Amino acid sequence: MSDPRQQNRLDRDLWRRFSDAAPKAKKPGEIDPNLLAAYLDGTASEKEGEEVEHAMLADPSVLDMVRELREIGAAAPVVVPETVKAQARALVPSEIAPRRKVFRGRWADAVQWLAAAAAILAVSAWGYWLGQNTSAMQTQTASLVPTSLSLEVEETNESAAIFDVNGGNGGGGVL
Amino acid sequence: MDKLINSCLEGDPDAWDAFVERYAAVVYGAVRRVVLARVRKDPSVSIEDIAQDVFLRLLQNNMRALRSYDASRASLVTWLTIIARNVALDALRKKILPTVPVEADRDAAPEKSSPSPSATGNLPAGLLSPRQALVLRLLFDEQLEVAETARILGVAEQTVRSAKHKAMNKLRKHFGAEEN
Image (cartoon, rainbow over all chains, first blue to last red):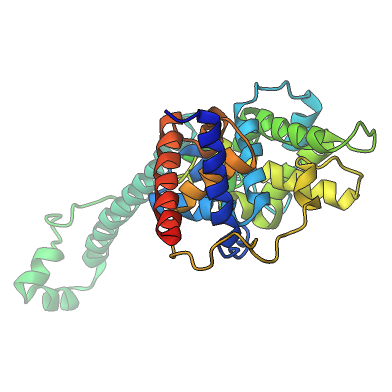
């Protein structure tokens, strides 16, 4: 069995022969943070992984970046100064119109939906009432019409049904 | 997670508060590590200020950076770490501070413009996959251990050994055939 150290030296020499002869790959452009994050998380596809590793091979700074990001990811959590959080919270820009909620909390959306539904029901009810009262008004108005005109109304069955001076169809609503 | 981001993007101030509370440690930790790895103790470098720059970057231009995050591809923690690192490096470059490079020798070594006389000329395209070449570079050029190589690549140690074994077989076969 060959000496492992000697074998390692031979392997390293073969690698050097390869890397000397291999054409230098073009340095890649900036890597999309989503792609890089997927690679670091192990969720990148095989093709995406190859793309990142090709970039690491072609550009030493990409390799350094991946190494550093791995180290950062493995590091213990740090204590954040409260001033950092306070200043970050204050950074909400004024050009973004905040959604002003009348109700806050987890039930805010449900309350708003109920309010909208109640408004629709109210409008519908008002419309129905209006419709009912319009019929009643027409009934009472028809009773005030002189005899000669009312005779014309009574000539057709449909008209008689609608303008029933005795308060039949139409509900006989009160003005 | 998506709901919190979506609420932030809609301009919900409560959502932004919750976002800061949850992820300030990720941002601050990343910035701190990047800065301390490069800068000697300098009172003019404020890690807190650079951390604020990260949050500002997320909000600028109608939250363009935050909108670019794709939750279907990776975790927000990892994505934020990348953004925080980029912002920290940009901030350090602007300050043009004397820095201690992470890899001091990398830039100093002259780039090889031509192969050494012992190297062979034509290599078949794709003789080694990027993964295999990367493994050999890390093991031989960077002289890293298998465990460290596996950690950088995010794979198991056995995967590194296997990649090395296959790569060396290919090289031996290729250069052995050439010599014959």
